[in-house]
Image 1 (tube, rainbow, N blue to C red):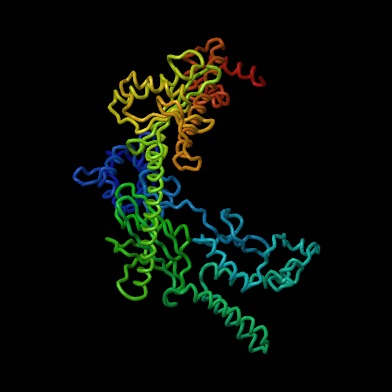
Image 2 (cartoon, helix red, strand yellow):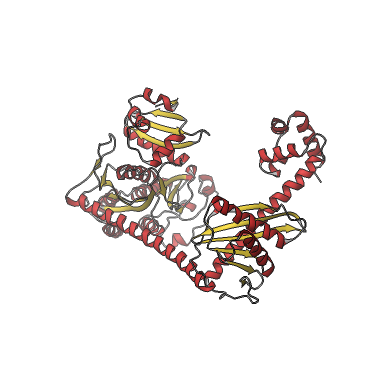
Length: 601
């Protein structure tokens, strides 16, 4: 495996070999990782003007400034490497597999007389992890089976040989009810304990057949030695194991070790079901959603999901069943698209799960959308608005005794925050703590800008405050000649009263109403946004004033420091060398001396 770096213009010199290619943008940020059977042909296809690539791909290609490749031995190796790189770097143009769950595992500890217990944290040095399990219930079923079949300890004692020899421990209730053989007091040696543990490992791996053969053999030995009671106990354990296997059986036991992966998709997303089958029993079933980034084909999406899920579930499958035929077989990946028989039935079962998952996601998205629509429709009704308020803007002021006056505007679209549309304002025309005049200024500035740019006006304007602030905002709209073109209200904090322009008395919306909760959320968001901005401005101004008191440092120098380091805290933590790189050695020396002098102040 070897790596090389190229510029986009050098793509014709790439090797005609399998490998992985990485695209970097102007900031040297990794934006895409792909695999190829032929690096020369695949990478070249992105820069071939005759190829009908989609708009998203063209946008990505425009950003590429550097290409890095890694040559591997086979396309399957390229698939594995691509998966690892995407998982590590999560480039913005790669397929996003939506799966934010933390899955449960069973940990076999690395110690004397190892334990088996559930965990969600993977720390490799602690021992061997089995799973992940698709659900806690599935994990508990396996753990309960192991504890019924074998006498594996559940205590957390340190069973080092010298600790046992010291006689520090006593047997607990688990020993008395037959769930443990007392290794803590030397009643069971590690060799006998390991014998049970080996069989437990086979069950954790899904190899139930090995454990069944072990119980049959042990039962036969005890029967031949006329130890019928021991033989009967083993028979009960064998029955328990067979009963567990029968519950998981979905196909012929002759179907030994395979994975099933199926896909259904729409314009934006794909839905994949992944199943692991051993000896005819289903040992794992998992649904995932993939968000398309570059209009990928179902084949690309399915292969991506398959490799990631096999890696996640530590699959050792000998073959894989898919519901679509690959255009070309990948060497090292035994993939089949069965048309008849038990394997075809497994495909149908997996596909049924994928279709149900897609339907479930669509239903959930619909319910969420219905809730949003319901809330803003309710708000329209409660406020008697002419249109559905799917675009709401809210204003708030912030100042402390007139210092550093600022304001904020937050925007909600379809009942959700549109953070990119939020705006901060420095108050420019008002002197002193005048909330009314400040409100008039920012409302006027906001809507003059929208008029100048020809952008759509909101369906509802919310002013954080009572009649005074509302009247000031109304004056601003009148001066712009747009008063009456959009509804405007004020919301007073104390009693959550809603004021309309010109009305002497406020209206009250039911305190339990979803529409009032939406207005409160919008008002609180505007307040939070204004307060945060005010604190930052106050902090910067205070620090800037202190800086300009230092000989040789003026306002421009202070601004350069804040522009580079972004915050006062980072300036205070910066070294003399870092500061000198921005403002020069002599000024940096003066600043460091001032910092040392004021360290305890």
